[in-house]
Length: 314
Picture 1: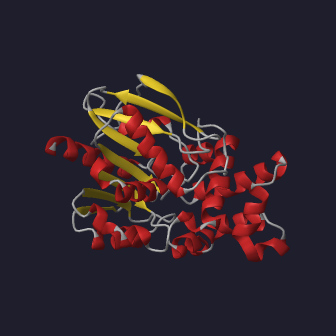
Picture 2: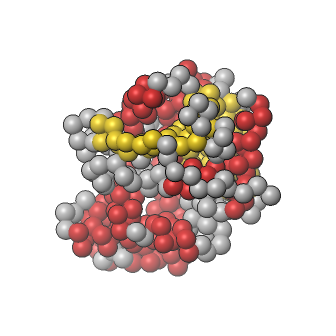
Picture 3: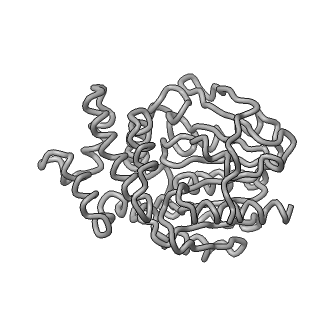
């Protein structure tokens, strides 16, 4: 059985000023002269966890991770000003130019899969291949599922998420959370953030996983995750409906690898099937004993196998 590679430290890291508000944290680890792989974290707002380095053979890959605007170690934290999908796409391209990289592998899960597709469709000439996990296509029905549909699978977690709000605010669940999350009072936004993040964490794995829950309810991460997700959801993730499917011809010649948990409740498998059906140059691997989180061992194994396949075929 494949295991995650041992923990490594970055050989280089820093902050890149991308506009008059935001500085994004970036890091490089592994082989300086290796095949570059760009890792796009989820959320929006989750930040680039250090364990993401461990999916890649450090002797072969030049591993590039960055925290998207408002997330992780980027500054200012949880900031929604000048924070759109288009801004993030431009940030990725600024990083590529800054690093003087010609082409790279793009690797992303959950919202990271959305951003991977959006970036690759905008700059296909700069992409070697695309590795995706837990597909989210940013459609209205997917957002509605997250906000309401999950109650069919996890009614107790959804009820806690819904009941956090006063009775009179529950008819507009997203708007009510959004107003609290952008409130400047730390008590108001903090409590709403933890409620949102705990709901997402509890629904992310096939079986209860304390390490996922602990990571998500860290107050800084909870606020950036919840505030940015609500901000993006309020704005239809700054994409046209079905844009990521309609623009698939832009990446028709790029090889895609899709890893999807069968019991992914956050991003159900329907979206992975929809993507694979319009992208003939992709392969879809359904992981039977897994949910959404990349911390689940079957998901980790599938991603490690995928990166090994790419290494052998390079």
